[in-house]
Image 1 (spheres, rainbow, N blue to C red):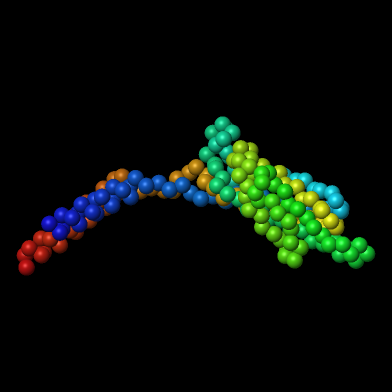
Image 2: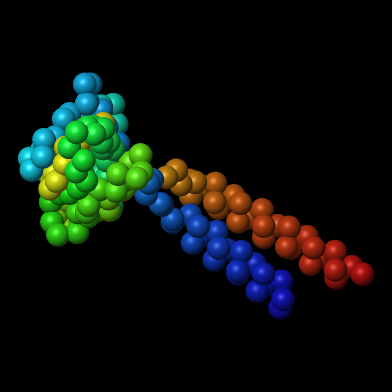
Length: 190
């Protein structure tokens, strides 16, 4: 009876595993690295767009109706600003990073090389819709330079991980049953 349970468990496992197909996680990256770096004057702003639709592994949205299968679950925005070191002004630099929606915005901390800003629901929707994210860097006080901005979007490219063929799984299952039967026969001879 114990061997029958083992066989049934093995067959259940084989048939469950044979039907699994996992989506492949994918990352799309877009970097804007300005040369020369962009200067932002006091009380002004700088606007730019990240576009993940270009390149060899470009994002192809399923929302656009072009037959694409890609979808984005979340993203991170990395921005690098630095002070212009103008000692004549002696004013503190305060920059605000603005992206679509209410979340993911924030003030830049000039004590670090770059800052990471999380995603917003509206930003994620726009990336899923057309693969583009609008960003504005606003100076509240002081002036500074924009070194680079990097967008890292994480999602699913619509392709499935390789799944073993059903014939292979059946062969594996019959092999397990054969081993179980052989061990049972050996136990009965003793």
